[in-house]
Image (cartoon, rainbow, N blue to C red; front, side, top):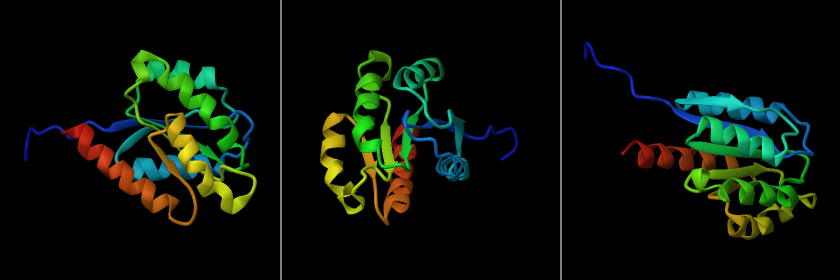
Length: 146
């Protein structure tokens, strides 16, 4: 339709926990989100919680995503979400985490309830992590666009 503006893209911030120096996971997630109509700020690896919170307060994203490859996301993730959700301005911002969250492999699923209790809006692990995350993002886009 002539004269019609394209819909505004959603904005996401992606990061890893402070002990995780892996970056290919962040590149993959950035591309995945961009393919799903998000603008992405990729903060990179080894980001401390206060830096993530500072950038989130500045940018006011529609989604904050933490990714872990080294297995420490389960240990460190709770600190991030508590700091983010502890800020009134970010309390309603969806914060999710995924990847290899524990050092015991299959025990990643055991960490899900603990991380949800800490304040995460979604926890994505195992073979179905990417499809589940895409469903979550699809529902998030529908809800926030309404």
